[in-house]
Image (cartoon, rainbow, N blue to C red):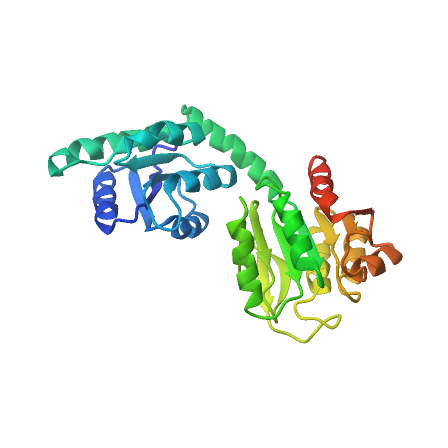
Length: 338
C-alpha cells in the first residue's frame, strides 16, 4: 500500500456492539479507515461490491449464512484479505485453509480490549502489505478478474427455459465473465426465480435493477415486464432496466438484450439461445455473431419447444448447436480462448 493511503476496511459482524468495538479500535490507527460495516453476509456482499474494501474483518456466527460458508463464496469471486474475528477458535484451521489472511479471537472481557485491538490492527496491516503472500495472490486474481470483466455471456430463453437455464447455471462455477439472462416470465416470478437459483449456486444471481454493475461471478436476470440492456458508462458495464413496449412480442425481450450486447461488446461476448416458442432473440443473436461474438443454440432433442433456437439456426445466427447438458462444457471451451 502507498504510504499516504489508508487501508480501507469493512467490518462484518452481526453484533452492533462488536462492530462498534472493532471500528473504534482499528480506526485509532492513523493508517486504517473503516469505510463501512455489515450485519450479515448478504449485507456484506452488497457492501463489498459497492465500497471495494482493501480488507475485511469477518465474524463466524452470523444469521442467514455463517462466516465459513461466506468465505467459500467470497474469495473465488472477490479475492480480498480477510481477517476472521471470532470466539470460535475451532474454526481457525478451516478459515485459513479456505484462504483467510488471519484470525483474531474476540476479547473475553474489557480487560482484553487493548490487546485485541493491537493484534487485529497488526494483522490487517500485515495482510495488505505488498510483501504478503495473501495480498500478492489477491492481486494476481484481480488481474484475472479484470480480464473476465471485458467479456459478457448473454442467454435468452422462453418456454421450458426455467429448467434449461438452471441446468446451464448448475454446470458453471464463479470463474466466468458476467452472465445476463432474459427469461420470459411475469413480474414477481423473476425475483423468486433468481433467489432460487442463487441459493443453489456459487455465483451471485439476482434480478436486474437499473444501474446494476456487470461483474464477473454475477448473474443478472431481467425483471418481469422490464427490458434489460447492456450499457457502458464511465468505462464500466452496467444494466439498464426499464419498462417499454413489447419487442418481438415480449417484454423483457431477448432481442433487446442481444442487440445491446452486440453493440457494446462486439466480439467480446458469447450469446446463447435456449428453448422457447416464437422467434425472440434470433435477430439479436445474428447481430452478435455478425459482430464477431461466438453463439450457441440449444438442439431440438433437448428443447421443450424448438422455436427460438430453430429460427436462430435457420437464419445463420447459431455457430454451434448442442444439448442443454453440453452447453456448460461449450461455455468453458469458449472461455479458454478469451
